[in-house]
Image 1: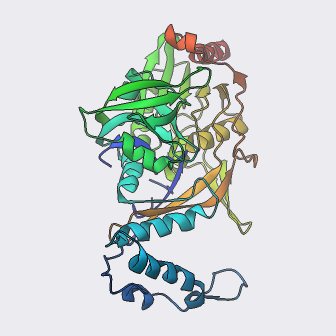
Image 2 (image 1 turned 90 degrees about the horizontal axis):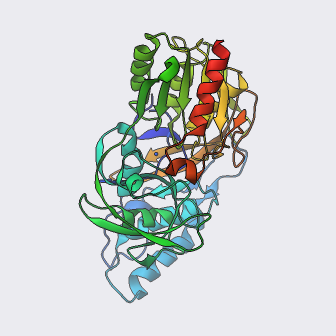
Image 3 (image 1 turned 60 degrees about the vertical axis):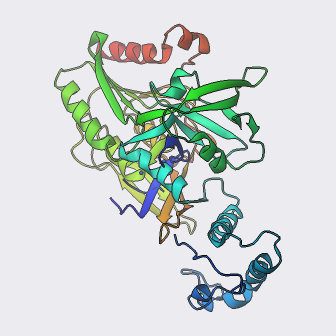
Amino acid sequence: MQSKTTQIILGVVVAIFLLGGAFSGGVLVGWMVPVQSKTSAGNPPFLSTALPSTITVAGTSAAPVDTQTLFKPFWEAWSMIHTEYVDQPVDDQALMRGAIKGMIDSLGDTHSSYWDPKTYQSATAQLTGETYEGIGAWVDVTGEFLKIVSPMPNSPAFKAGIKTGDLIIAVDKEDMTGTPGDIVLKRVLGPAGTNVVLTIARQGVEKPFDVTITRAKITTPQVDGKLLDNNIAYIRLYTFGDLTSPDLRKYLTELLAKKPAGLILDLRNNGGGWLDTAITVVSEFIKPGAIVMYEQYGDGTRTTYKAKAGGLATDIPLVVLINEGSASASEITAGAIQDLARGKLVGVKSYGKGSVQHITQLKDDGGAVRLTIARWLTPKERQINKVGLTPDVVVPLTDDDIKNGRDPQLDKAVEILLSSAK
């Protein structure tokens, strides 16, 4: 497991969550500029002395970049802001963070971004299993509007009827059109006991509508499990966080001791998490040594990940539930199980996130930089980015099913396992 300052995450944005107070024990994936006086409007001395005169990109034959020439327009703009902008003094820290954000945004990659300190805390803290304040929903900040990946079970968002795919188009009656998702996220955050009014656009509903949610303290679930009727074991993973692997192993030990006829692994609305956790989780179900994923880098090289030894559930009949909210680490797990014919996938097509992000915390509480460093492939070398995984057995779950407490996807999984036990 890597350090907390340099990690790799597999999540829709895993890593952005509607948790107050602030996406993985694997790859998840600052520095802070001191406030300058108006007289130091040129290159800040602490930067001009530290900035190397040239930068050579490792592993390439490209000529070194002359940074002194390259950054002249930047410092010219910096100077203009400090000497000509109408409202002085300006916030140098905000300028620095905006510059980093703009630089990363220019890559054109929706999964690469700059996180200010508060967003970084929100993005990573959820995976520790601690208690936070907020509405309790996993979200995707990369689209035109803040998008709900899934509400957390029994959270204020869940109780208010928030659903997967909902778009937040206004917060407290203020239109969020054109506002970056991470900024909208901050508007949604708030202390327990306070209300926030979200204007929701939902597919299939003609007009947007308002939902008032009272924020609360939320303990983020990671794993749950029980024995169903007909002697079928059921385990649900809500994320791939720090506690997921030990909690999963605890539930497997308890349930397998009861000699179940089969096992259902529910990954629905699981937006992902730490890469290391994904490998550990899938290793509970796959024979050791089997390839479970490839990580392919921009230069064509790749890293091969294999199942670890010691899996507790490598032989029991298995069905995995997925849906449109199953992403990244969930798709690694489900994709390996499908490709290796270890079990059947039931539900609807998954989200389709096939990239890996590397998150590095910047010095001096400067936030963090999240960069896409690789694409990942299933054991059969499938690239599922923007494609998703198609279940072996497609079973929709309708609004009417949810309203009436029905779960045909779970029912089909039980049916498959009972049939295989005969």
